Image (tube, rainbow, N blue to C red):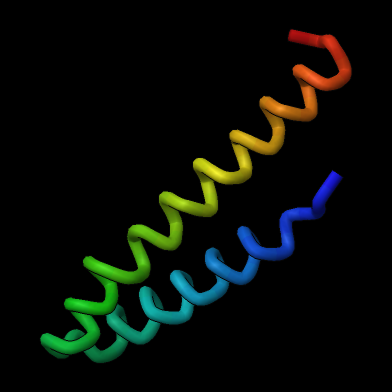
Length: 62
């Protein structure tokens, strides 16, 4: 099973953008937060849940 490396990187990038936006709320960082950081979080969560679902199906738990 693939580990959560890509998802972890996406969460890390989203967190960095979010922290930068909290400390310096400029229009550019607001754009990055709204259109880059939030989709990165969404993709990481959806991808992680999908991998867990596939693993549970493979092990015939579901």
